[in-house]
Image (cartoon, rainbow, N blue to C red; front, side, top):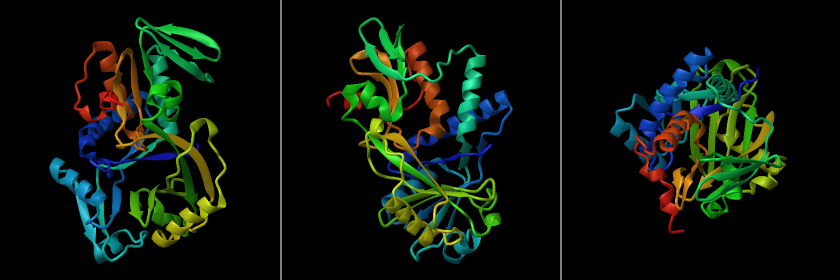
Length: 333
């Protein structure tokens, strides 16, 4: 089975991410619980590198999180960084921050495992079903899917880039973004195995390059993600310009990879203006709940976000500090 992998960072590196560290630690424990229940390895913590200029806001935020939460890490500079992880080409001002709580998830296997476990516990899964509409009123919610209507007491909407289509009132708060995932052939596969090549993130000259190690010895994930696009008009073709752009970044920053992508695919995610997701009860819609707008970092947190949503729906309260994710911050809009 080919493994597609999703980076799992012990501290998220984008703006104000220190608020997520406790959620990520709980998510890690819940991933381990699922692994034990399904007897499969889903999460591998092989470390994560964030590489960049220490004077940028991104790196300052990362170092602040490390200091605040006393995270296990190393900071590498100059020759030490180059000798430790020679796969990366560094600029004179660059430092490496090695997060020892980071790694990668086998995301397809994780989804299959979660669904199987849910069914074993009594969940009903409707496969090959397109949700066409969600229509809440004061007492119940009507869901239309594959031309069939379902009436439920409460609904949790987790539709990512399609949320604005199903809940039009959120269309201005969520932007669907087209993301291109690319993989490259290593010149020496041994240097890019998980034990030698942690997941990584770099930002320089307008691009954001992230990646994971090789598992089969043939491909290393290195992707440059951007470009907004409507989800129902998703262009799954990857242009030569897009491939050239990410190839140039790889050629500049990862000289041990052949800078021509051997695989490219397209997917979507929903982004918010402040890059914080929307989790909770929707204003004025007391029986409609939402988890969306994860802005490219939601999968790693899905177990704890699911737990929060379940607590809110079944018990009416949240036991976690997630005020920064509250839908009511958009109530005025």
